[in-house]
Image 1 (cartoon, rainbow, N blue to C red):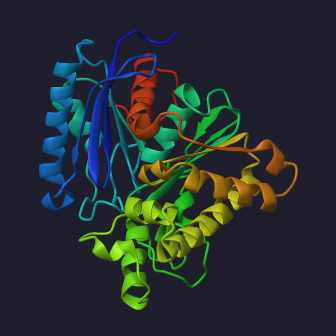
Image 2: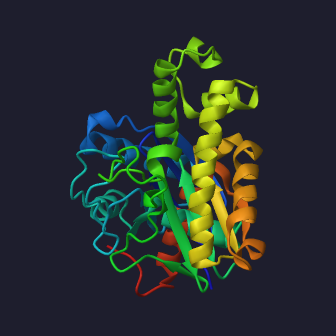
Length: 327
């Protein structure tokens, strides 16, 4: 039976930090979202993150946290609670974040890959609730993934399983942060959609509303595409084709009940969801194509926070004796 004590959830993104108190019903309280400012380095960012945690706990009004859950992109070592070298946080090498959080808040702490935490949150409280096999892709600063297999969180042998952003979609293509060329992340992350848009603007002299912007972001590309901007639409359609290809491959491999898409890029809504659904419907092998529901995250922008909270809630009731690091 789940504890009634709330927990503190900390999500470390490449662009933003998000913290909240999470209660056993999956609701967030005292949510705070602030820029990561990763150029300041790990010490300053972690001090800021923990300050946000204390502020959230004080403002939420649900009591003191019984545990802390931390979600972050990898690579990381969930068993030891160490950030070994997250790709979206240059210079964060062997950071013992679990031990640091436990000392800062005086309670046990747990670490998990952000997309792995997210799939747990969606499985327990969101769009994948109750599914025996569920996949989650986050399209944000990077592209991550997580999976539920036979109703249980799948972490992989070393705890970094589910790197769906590094599925190859264009062999020999754009260089990815992982060092390979042609990964999904190199095309479909919010960061790389913006980079590709700027490259296209420099190479192509067609008129585009994007040229009027001082800084092009992924949301500008999707908005311009929706408004009929031909250059933006060309880039968006290519991105959706590659994303749909990757999701189709994952559907063929896992034969899931549901594939959940989350992260900032998915704020484009139907402009993203419909073409991906159509590609999967047309291209995935039967019967997987007919059985797999492709949908947007039910928890929206709070998915990683709620997922980190779900991990901490499990920690407080000791549900998973083989789970990640506890201090």
